[in-house]
Image (cartoon, one colour):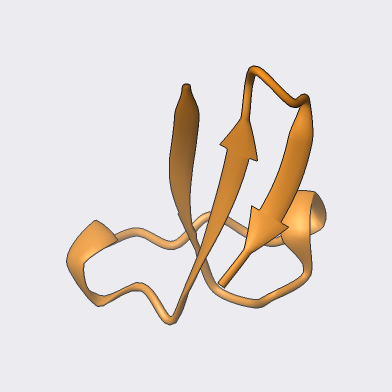
Amino acid sequence: MRICIPTETDMGQVAKVYGHFGSAPYFTIYDTEKEMWRWK
């Protein structure tokens, strides 16, 4: 499963969460099966 978190920067898991999902400048994605962080 992948969990998508809207973030203000592309700093991965240390990035500050963005308040509005639809207009977030970046998204941090966590893959629970691979236990891996990604950001776009």
